[in-house]
Length: 225
Ligand code: DX5
Ligand code: ZN
Image 1 (cartoon, protein in one colour):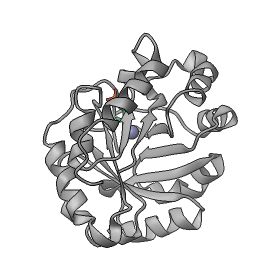
Image 2 (image 1 turned 90 degrees about the horizontal axis):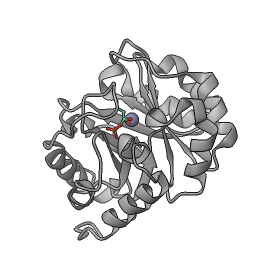
Image 3 (image 1 turned 45 degrees about the vertical axis):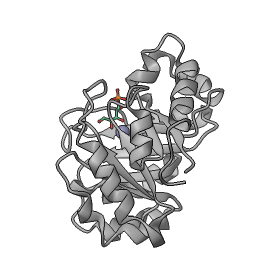
Image 4 (image 1 turned 135 degrees about the vertical axis):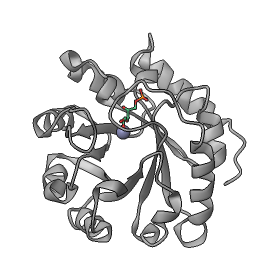
């Protein structure tokens, strides 16, 4: 199964954002993960449209926008206009999830749904066929640098099974506490997109860290080849 690394700019140096984006452009990262927090759905505020537009100006890779915001339907078109290629909303934040997924596609983006650590993957069953991506949170959303929750492995494996057959192309992304210590096991469980914030940006050589994550995931014995 093909996999990709999506470094999260939440852990970047915002005073040197252009430098960090250029680093990602020249690295083995395939997507750039963009964490939007509204201080309502999660107890933290990150950044909004002006920052995303600035990132887009320099990024040579797709922006994977993770919306940790209440009622995201209000802003889908604006995130698409700001340069998102993938838009992921939270299951817990949407009353009419199917409509939201349709709105993301209508805006020309790939559609993802994220699940908090307490939300069972089975709740995605009736929207799976419409999804490009499912994001399994392996920490409670809101902050970078938190400890990975091991229950995530079981959720990923169950979701990969649920997505078998007609949804086999589903991207299963894992977000929170991902590092070289767990990325191979996460790939083995069935994930194929890996968000890494602090692991990448706290490293002495972030581009080398991205390459190491990529390599470590690649050598995982692949049950889903
Ligand atoms: C958490 C965000 C993550 C975060 C990951 O709410 O969704 O994308 O940046 O950071 P690390 O890799 O440091 O756990
Ligand atoms: Zn995220």
